Image (cartoon, rainbow, N blue to C red; front, side):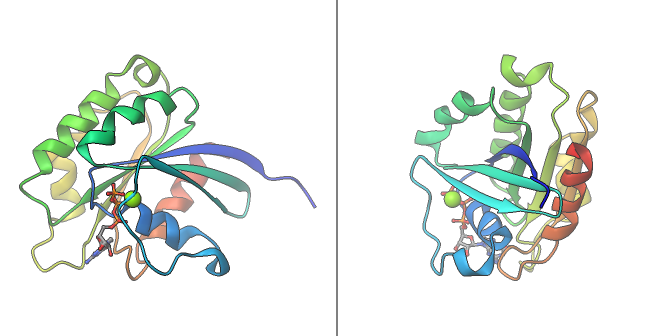
Length: 171
Ligand code: GTP
Ligand code: MG
C-alpha cells in the first residue's frame, strides 16, 4: 500500500497532566501498556492515523527533566500540549512553561501546529476547555495554528477529535 507520511510530534506539559495516558490510548490496542508510570526523561512511541505515521516524543513533565524538552524542538513538526484541567494551582506554571516554549528560538518563528488537551475533564472541579484557554492566553498565539479539546484520557474521550484536527493541519 501507500506509505504514510512520517511526522515527529512532541508531547509536552506538566508532570501528572496525562501525556503518557493520552499517547497510550492512541496506540494500537495490542501495544498499549497496562500500567502507566511517571515518565523518566522521555519515551518514544508510535501510532498511525489514516494518512500519517506519528513518532511521539513523550517527554517527562517533572521539573528536573523539563530542560530536556528544548533539545527536541528542532525535530518536532507538531506539538501536543497537555494540561490537567483540575490542577488550578499549577495553571500558572503550565502557562510559564508554554510561554517559554513559544519564545524558544527553535519554535518561535515556525508555523508549527499545537494541539492542546484540557485533560481530566471528568474531575468534578475541572475547568472547561474555554476557561483553560483563557488562563493560558491561547488567543495570543497568532502565528501558529492551534486547537484545544477537552479530554478524558482514562476513558479515551476527546482524543480522536484532537488527532483529526492535527492530521488536517499536517496532511
Ligand atoms: P509525567 O510522565 O510525569 O510527565 O506525567 P504524564 O503527563 O505522562 O501523566 P500520566 O499519563 O502518567 O498520568 C498521571 C495520572 O493521571 C495517572 O494516574 C493517570 O491515570 C491520571 N490521568 C490521566 N488522564 C486522566 C484523565 O483524563 N482523568 C483522570 N481522572 N485521570 C487521568
Ligand atoms: Mg508520562
